[in-house]
Image (cartoon, rainbow, N blue to C red; front, side, top):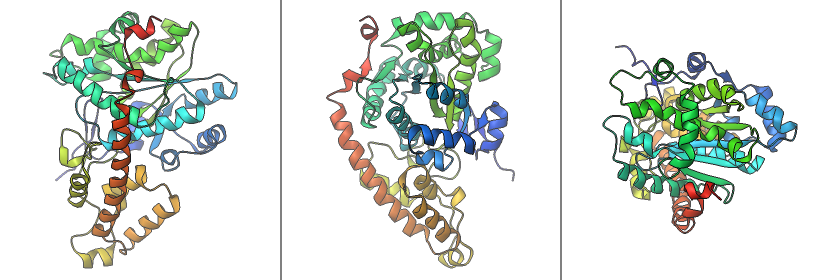
Length: 379
């Protein structure tokens, strides 16, 4: 039986992803040791997701560091498609984006694409549903700890007057054959989703338009979103803007065998609103890289590279590199049993959820200071 061929698109990620091949397929660049050294010198420290290769690919990251070294500030842009509850997997690039905002004192545009999620995949959700999830997801974004006054949560339908004119400017320079080639649209695709990539391009240029001068932009996001900004980079010079730079993350694997964590498969994902009992149940029942029996595990060891329990620690839950390396050694050597490892991770996840959920409740009091509307841009 052959292994399922991996699929990576902005709407679907399946199979075991070969990230080196994905770099070749998308035409991006690997993050080199030289770039890591420059980031460390500029930021004062390397985030664990950089040290461990969770963020692994880029476009024009060296240029962003060049302009920073010349004393030019850059802005940040990332996003979320509000189609359901937030998972820990969604938070991986958000936590890294917070690091970038903190270290570089950067203004952040955080787009919430409620329009996209009502259009795709067909038949899509109602706008009422996507607006509900916009506010729910926004609470998790605020709870991540982004800076008040330097973070704008931009929901497309709440800021349509601000975004639409620039989206039209983008759309004039993009043909249907181009978006069909980039996104794989079929002739049956609705015309809304064909236009939507122009809306997603806008926040990369919005600060430049508002302040009346070119502002460099860095987009931290998972690699599946790269096609949107590949298109944005193609048309940026035609509109007189800098090409947005990008830095791409890998996917936090799901708790079930194969694929990334997915909100549409509840047992594969830990949601930010999960209780400790539910989260522990999912971890206890998770797929691992262990053997069928204790005797085999002791004799042959496990495989941390395919184990979501180990990957959770690598992505987020073990800040100490030496401890993580020791866990890997004990797993490979058969000293660490899967049940023990699951129990340890469950405790870390429970602590994370308690802290996040407290901040999420506090976010309800300040949400409207972050979630802007068209009127904000008219001031």
